[in-house]
Length: 223
Image (cartoon, rainbow, N blue to C red; front, side):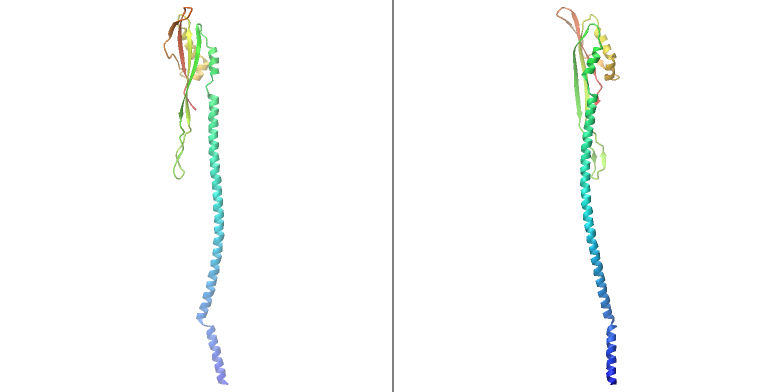
């Protein structure tokens, strides 16, 4: 009987020793840590997938906004071009040369024995191409652009005849220069000149007269 009790006690001691074996405890702890790491890894992977989906959504929205922004810029450029052209047309409409003003002024400039026989206007336009804005690869403006311009040059020629025996054409030239309309449109210089020498002629009745021309140069205008 005592032998049996001793064997039983030894068996219990061995069992207790197995339960307290550090290797088994280390294995158990390691398995628990592995499970925890796997769980954490799965959690991080799920968060990464969610973040990736959100990133795709934000990039898609950004691309959409970028396309809309480019469209807005294109529409704005078209609007600016149309506004500039409209302003130029308005400027041309309000500042263009009108023959009616010249005719009205000439009715008020009369000198005895001087008859206006011909009126001619010469319009010369010099076109300057547009200078586009220069930018570098980063979009920084290197030099500003300039819109296309047109230089307008207008010359008015008045041909007349002086039927007097004297120099009435000189008075007619002075009257043109002193006319308020021509003073306004010709500017400070009041440039009225005689482009060629007088031509003395005889009409069918045998009366002598002088054919002359006056040339008025209008100030150049950039439109």
